[in-house]
Length: 341
Image 1: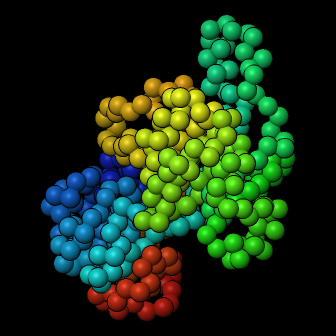
Image 2 (image 1 turned 90 degrees about the vertical axis):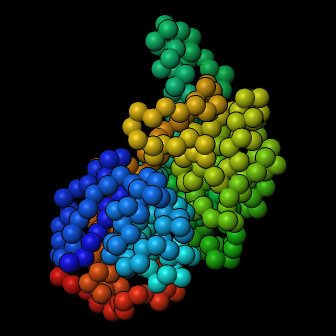
Image 3 (image 1 turned 180 degrees about the horizontal axis):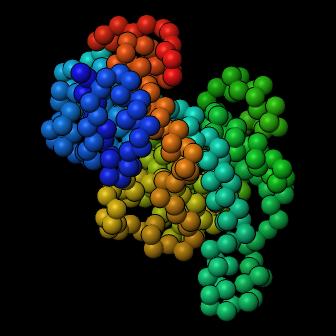
């Protein structure tokens, strides 16, 4: 019998569909929270499959998973998993890359609209009987303003598709413009250099994975290119932005504000009730949400069932649908095929 360890069982409760998927591979399903390496290893050192939502899985853990065949991420990003070490150890890494495209795009637009219409201010004004809030000097017509998309993958295109009917002018930056030229034309998006995008956009939205190349891509210098009236939106990964530099800009009112769903210095994956202190939590020109851009009842279920299915497929010797490290030489060979669902 295989042994499958599901991490983050407290912060992300398990659904029966996960158990059902692993059961078809004959796997014993063990549930733990496991936010620290020693907690993970205490339960998972002899596991055949490790399923993870938000825990960090460093090389020090992976190198001791002597039997593990698959690390299955129940979500899209794999920046918390040492994929290179897993590949060296012959461990397949899988993910669910597109499970929340709709939700993330909707959340991005919701943040943009909430800031454009200054909804947090308006709500507080109503509570204090400030009826003149309707004359807010920073509320402008959205049509004609520029939305800059950093990246133009599937999530950015989903935002572009939803933003166009509002009359926003759409800009995007990518490292390889030739690769995205046709897609940009289809969405009526102008591809521009990053510095120009930052300088010209009224709203800037980030749509990139976190890796060595994107860590602090928006450095203090690049953030300084933003207009004083600009709003930065981030539903991707917190560390793409130099958060300390962003806080300074916000405190000094050198940009209008930020709408953030991801953070470098706030651990929104901690156990419920864990207190946090951070200057972002004290600022009035920010909208903050707890990494909920991809969340819905439907997306949560999809990430769990497809993530567990990837793990079960590997245990059954089948190449999974979403393979993060395609160059891996698996500890046990995988065949291309399908099974009855």
